Length: 396
Image 1: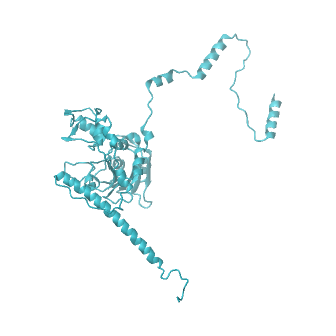
Image 2 (image 1 turned 90 degrees about the vertical axis):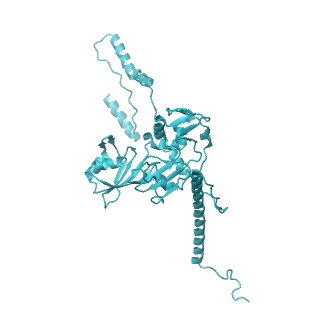
Image 3 (image 1 turned 90 degrees about the horizontal axis):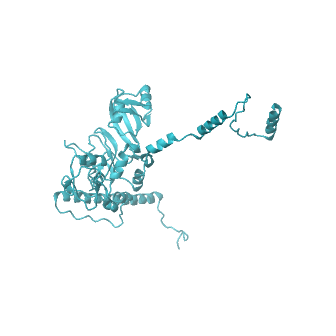
């Protein structure tokens, strides 16, 4: 007979052993997940290399059936089939093909570098039909079906451009394994400026985030060669006059209470090198400039030189960001003329009274002028109302 016949568990594990088992299971699952996405990136990279060299693509690596792509990958590879059947302007079409942003494609078209059905087309507003053949740089352009949205934490010494004739390092070299689609950066960061940079092949989003009317906010961390004085701090906050006009900031603060050479500045202007020029105009040397936020996106959990795909929710927020500011109401000249010609009802009443008073004969007595109706007075208590009525009666 057992010594303890009612004992439910003969050998109970310690809590530390149970926790360590759970920790090891999570570590294994995380490792499998990372391996799956690494294999996926490697397959795309090898396929792109094989496409360039003309060699046969290597066989795809098998992955576990339990591994599923995350929402970020699903959002990054969202198919926009309707875009291929849409009739759109030529500059918008080239932007959707991943040639460049809308503003840059206007210059490309104006320089006569684009052919439509074998004929050079120099009108950016030309409506491209689904049957038209558009050629740029000797290659036929196709609308990108897989829209990509990549956030990069840009390091120094990288050029924010798709191609550099001098052979310098570009930001596209940092995201070679991110996608096989041709993407381009939204906006520019100087060679010595680091921080958040967004790359995509979505022409509509590029136009929206680049247009000044949407007032996209950016936050920078500035490191100066010396402390920023209170006088210069106030001058920046009130607004400075630069060579291209007045510049106003949306926010300004000392990032470190002990070190006043580190400044946080929020701005929505898209002028060239505007943050550096603000401080250089006051006699400071900008030793470091880092963009910590762009359009609500930060570099959190993204190391310097690394990248990540945007989540579906982030893409949705970007597309509807400051949409009301971009749609400014325009008043026609006819409405302005009608408003100026329309008479005020009060002026008509005064004019009418003046005519009737001139028509009446003068009696030599002072005539009462109708005053505006007096508003009813409110009383807090009933006794206060009675006292006011007695006062009025006594006065009469």
